[in-house]
Length: 193
Image (cartoon, rainbow, N blue to C red; front, side):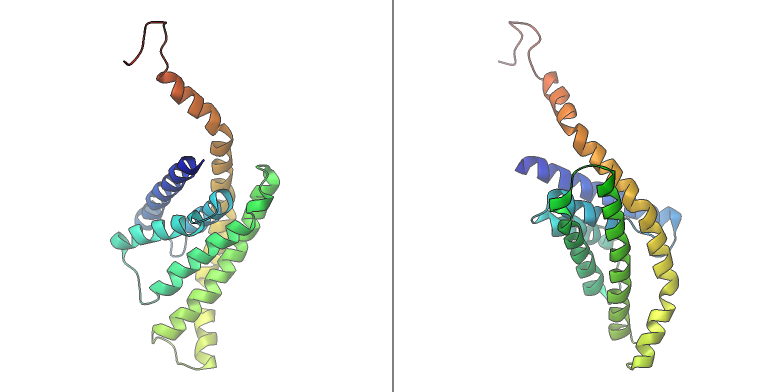
């Protein structure tokens, strides 16, 4: 099972990297992202160290290409915490439509958390707003359009990617068996020796 989890984590990271790069390069809508979906899936379906490895793997590798800002510590740690949100659903996963709704609810919570946490980081570190309560409020007000995009994106992307992950997980034994059948001898004297 450990090998399967490693393989699934690597696939999540791979598809997360491809998805994030495609969204940034071609869709170009600020704060539309798929890392939340893959963070939640990694936490809920894999748990353990993969709760952090999946989101941090995606963001670290893509940030090498895309770059990041002075609030790097806030964005990276936010996605690690979002992985924990997924982990909270780990015991309740039953691979049915209800799980998809629960993950979507966590996607909404994740959007609100990300907005509050990273905007605080932006206010604290960017120097763009006055270091006062009024500056903090102004920072949150200016971040509302980004929150809207993030929320709408998660309302669509989290259920889509969760459903795809559940289908893949459900049919994994079938694909594994078919894959292994390729290497079985077909005839009595047919072998790899």
